[in-house]
Image 1: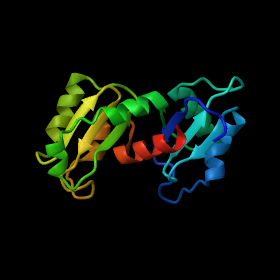
Image 2: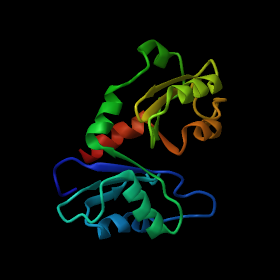
Image 3: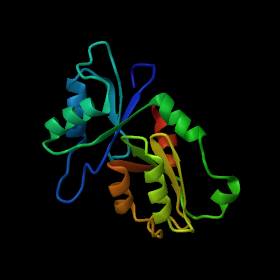
Image 4: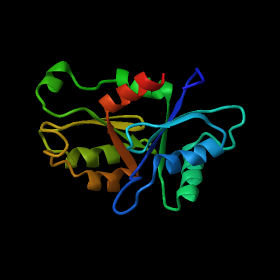
Length: 183
């Protein structure tokens, strides 16, 4: 990193799935070409960190980034954009108590949404949530604490995506490591 100051993070959904594989160079090239600096991938999981400059040639919105990357990659590439400040707030908002965290082998997951859910959508997700897992909503994110980890949970994430719309999930630990590395 060469430029101090706040960064943006683009969380991409399903970048390397099935037979589709994109290299880090291909992943980052559209942002470099658009005038961003300090463009980097984090953990090869569709996490891109960059810093805007005065010469950036793209609007700093999710639809603009989605359009830019989808065109460059040749497939739909939904983007969930979060600022450094937004990520710091996610880390600070740990919605589960120490007792709840201690009672699970799972890690706190944070899911990025394109739109804040309605009360009806939240109720629908609550109805789909197994009693042993904890789910809570806060703005454009929902937090999930699976009792026995993601793979041991019966939470129907694909059904929840049908209720809430496009989304992508990371552990809070991933967010913490990303902020430490790029801040």
